[in-house]
Figure 1 (tube, one colour):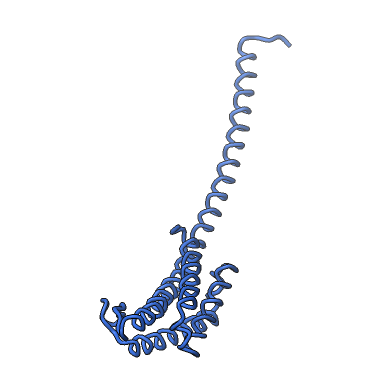
Figure 2: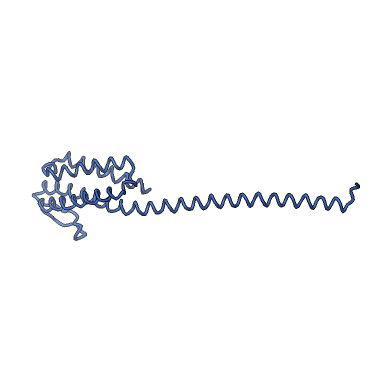
Length: 183
């Protein structure tokens, strides 16, 4: 068999067609594989976003309750040092107002009960799923210290106890902020 120009062109056309077909198959496979990876990544991002939304319904109210407890504890001590009165943030009025030591203690007890109720309810509902071990330990310590204050309000007169509580609040809220990438 002799290689005529038409035969060479025909063979080269067949080879070129085969190369194009193999390349097309390869890119088609790669494209489908990339698309599946992209879709899997997209689903992962969606699940993470949904989890963060659910976690936010837990963390925001918890964070707020912790901040109010801290304000009440420090306000109570300030009132004792200031003839039985101090300016504390009033959640009902959404502003600072002067309150007596008794009013502050009553507010503390009210918010402590709200904190405990919320914490136990959300724990029961499984929201602790969103809590790291460090944050869980910090919340337990904070709860225990807040409980000590509710059981024995004389501890609210001790500056060291109040400083310890404030350090627990800072540690707990910092862990919460870190979890949400706010720090």
